[in-house]
Length: 351
Image 1 (cartoon, rainbow, N blue to C red):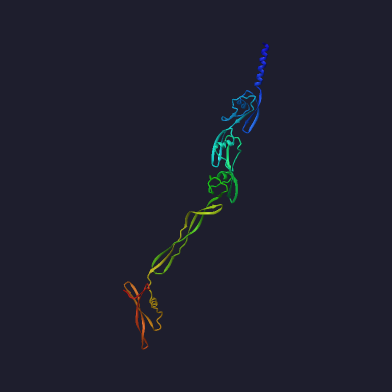
Image 2 (image 1 turned 90 degrees about the horizontal axis):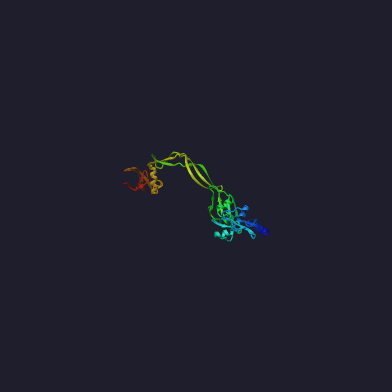
């Protein structure tokens, strides 16, 4: 009996020794791995806790946490939960994977990597929570700003992204030939105009007016300046737009008269002026084609000033020499004309 007990005790010890045998386990956590010694019989969860490996609620392991370490166990793979953002142009998608790679995430998003496009990481990279994967295309942009022009390669998506990348700050009034959210295209030109505004005041003259007044004490045709005109002054304020330091546009903001102009005043005659007899005779001679009373052929004789109604006329006769008697020439009247004493109008009869 004593011998039988001894045999059972030895068998139990051998069994316990076999059960508590240590094995080498490789713990793989994304791109990190570590080899640890683990006792057989403990669970994966116990081993990870023993090695201070912290799992998040959505992380998974292979084998599962409740699995026990056996002499055949060799590795534990930790599959981390990752919620990642994939960007392509202005489009953004989010995917959730456990233990996946960048390639897995792109496939899950439905995006395609086109010719000429690149990633900001490798397809084989393991996913990390809150990771951003960018599908990018490099383009060449011609940038003109602050007096310089340069061709710049970029993977930015929009005009705003590109300007931020180049550390270019736009002031409130600056102008860009494109909206901030415009997509960049290869060989695109972006021109930035630095715009500033200034106020400027100038003193300018104000023209005076010329006022004409009738004066019945003056004859028609007479004019007299009774007050000289004096220009006034005004202050004009402008808003001036400068583009890249050069004046581009001017807008009038206000106009204030500082000195009123003095008007020029002119009087003009309205009184009718009567012709003299000699002036009337010159008129009628011109009508008859007679330049003078010489040559003893024609003679112009005035019959004086005649009044008919409210009009005055000078009466004239044109006479033709017909004979000579005793050294005296005798004339015969061949035409009568009347000259308006005011207008110089010639009429043949008066009614």
